[in-house]
Length: 295
Ligand code: NAD
Image (cartoon, rainbow, N blue to C red):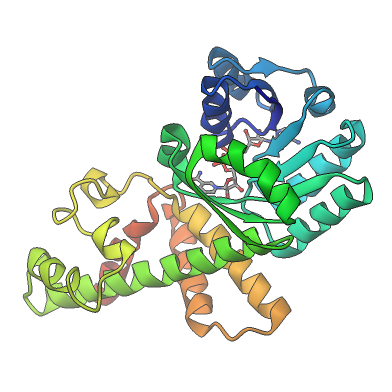
């Protein structure tokens, strides 16, 4: 049993903390939203009156917060309250620069740290099937890996500080671009009189095969569990896709990488979000593309 503090008990953090409790760890949590605290309490998390109080006796701390700004703010608050030897893990999706700053703050205090963002969404958080992409020292990874394994099915050590965030935004840039590509192909197929199923049957076993097609197919029918069969309810909300594409563009600008399709995908999702679709699943972009074609 490990004493774990969990800060940020929202859509992802709540079920992740609950899975740590199920694995017999002692979890003390904190969130600014009372309803999230109540749900976590019902799942067996002890609720502290502040983030500092939550981390005071912890051997490991996990943060699951919206942005890099929140992570730096919370880490500046809690790091001084931690016992020596505590491992601190951030599983939020944030910019690489803030992630590296957070690691540096932990290192200045002699604390081990990991960035360990996730893929798999709320469903994966509940079912403990997330993929963790971790960045940090080998020592930090070997301490964190057993805890992350409780909340996920795969834990990959990607490299030093910030490498987990780098892997996450590169992966999601592929995802955003590929969803637009698959959607454009279905829209073209419709115009050419080709059925959705026929395109799926060919492309899913040909060189067009990808996750956006075979797991998250943006038209209803071929993949019954995809959000297209459920009125494009998320799933993975378009607002979060835009967030990740913007992070990828910030990183591309800062590092001098040429990512024209990533930039185009960020623009398209920005327009899609601004048109009122931020809460829809990101595969709903296909309806938007159809509308543009018809205009
Ligand atoms: P969320 O908004 O549901 O949860 C974030 C929580 O952090 C909220 O409950 C909020 O009250 C809390 N919080 C903010 N500031 C705080 C503070 N100072 N102290 C304590 N709590 C504070 O968001 P989420 O969907 O759980 O996502 C969390 C992170 O995971 C984000 O970085 C997101 O990009 C990433 N992510 C989300 C998904 C998804 O499908 N939801 C998938 C992969 C990654």
